[in-house]
Length: 180
Image (cartoon, rainbow, N blue to C red; front, side):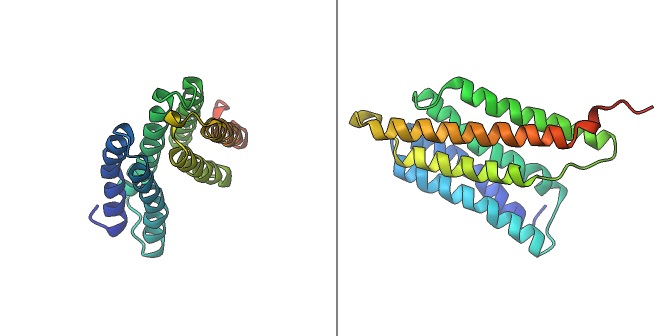
């Protein structure tokens, strides 16, 4: 567990409350900086884990969990701030729980469902969109641009989320066939 990749993952987890404190206290650019750093650390720890043979069970578990918690924390902030509808967050949660459940069923059958390209695109698009929403989060300005950015960002997040979730279930539909 004491690998460089795992330390970066733990650092990302510790950045989540820092991000939230900064976001909720109105320090949006500092919150954005922390969010960007946390997002980039995801790519860095993955690269280090693969390149330097530091893949661990802790990392396999904690890395995707850290990503999901970071994204959900940002989305909860935007729902509470009125910048994203709660149902959009519910769709993202449904996809995450659904794919996790699919993977659990597959593991019981001795299969591993690796991350699909569409899932990686979904993660990247979601993080970019959340960064844009943080950058343009200025509800007190009365400007319509932030509302437009939030609307487009939410749409991109939803489209990539639903597509990648549907792809996971379609490509692995045989997991649900009863074995005899």
